[in-house]
Image (cartoon, rainbow, N blue to C red; front, side):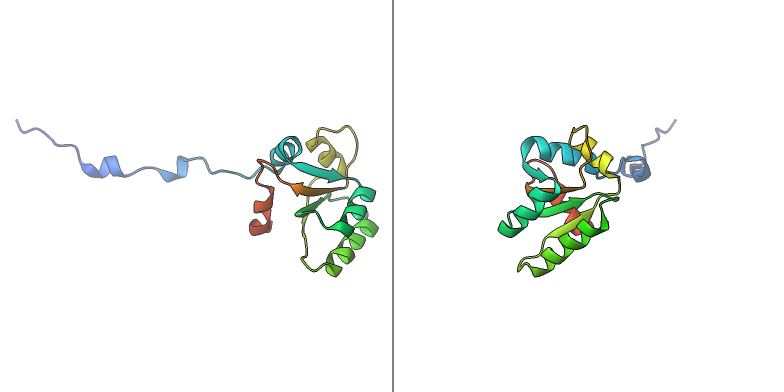
Length: 126
């Protein structure tokens, strides 16, 4: 009786399709940035802050008023170093809940991202 050796092919073949792919969850990253970083939200605070240019990026809600969105884009076009403006897929209620606030937030300015990966949205361009 001859012993059968294990084939090395079975050991080296790993089913890659079963591995979990890391999905970027913006809501949890907003919560992490809110707790560990520095954020400013609200129309008047953002417009006032744009004069000083402390922001690294802006998050605007999907239902942000067109007037405010065009105003932000105009101020951004006047800046020397333009900001990255990300259009959040949820409503302003969803953006408020992502910041653990019980009210609507239409725009968020990220000054310091903290432990989150929000600035990686620049490279993803979703």
